[in-house]
Length: 371
Ligand code: PHE
Image (cartoon, rainbow, N blue to C red):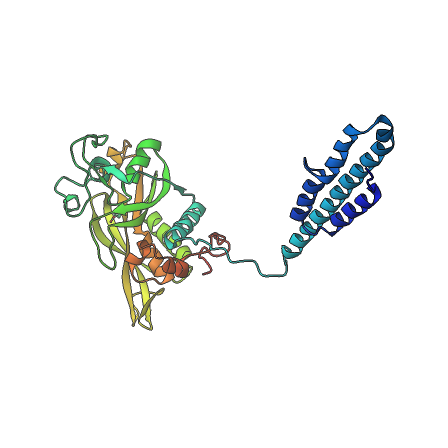
């Protein structure tokens, strides 16, 4: 048998060189070096040769197999590199293109205003306190000097939990959704004693629903308890707060006698506004022509019975408290007119009225958000 190994080798090498994708090359490898491949077949012929033949043919056949093996490996590396180059060419990143838009969340006006309030009051030395939204009737009513007969306790004004089962409050009363943030006054005095200087922002609930009332809304409570606190402190605090919040030096307050069971005397605070293009713009006295007064918040000197029920001696400790609607503050400052939209969760509304998370309220830069 005569085999022209050189020719066989040439032929194999040129087929390898012509293989232009990895699949073709793999098929070629099987055809040459596989179990039934042609080079493998040549190797098998060694077994049937005489020792002399084997001595002369053996090195040639082995050399052929080496040649084919390394040619296959070389071509494989080339094809893989080419495939990689092709992929890299299509996957380049053009850094000069504008970045793709990522949907961004926004800060809800209620959160924004609560942050602004915390900032303003922190500057006056107030801490932020919280209390539970599921409250018992002792903290929500009794300790705030609201007797059993008080109209706010009526079923149609307040959301009560069933009075059976594991719902008894700390004082045995019924559980309810708190109707105001005032129970945090009691909780704070009971838990930390005096003196106290806190605001308590949070959700409150009443069964009420129209364009300016929703069953859930937000209030911020303020409470100062110390020695020798009087109405002057209350007036200064409210004025300073409202000027900082509305970012106007010309905010004018009118304090009007009022009634709340938990304050004595009680004071309703109105702010003066001017009508500009049928819109109310806060500022100036409400008594000027074309102006008016708008009721803004309830406040007063904490009733001594509340101080007593909260475990403090009312002859030693006095103070003032106020409560104001956060949603209402947001509406007045940022110009929304339907409260219900606050809680619909409509993304279009949020995009329009929401604030940038990077826009932190600070007093030095003016506490309001740059919309
Ligand atoms: N809690 C009262 C309300 O919800 C507001 C208020 C708070 C009044 C503190 C006086 C003092 O209407």
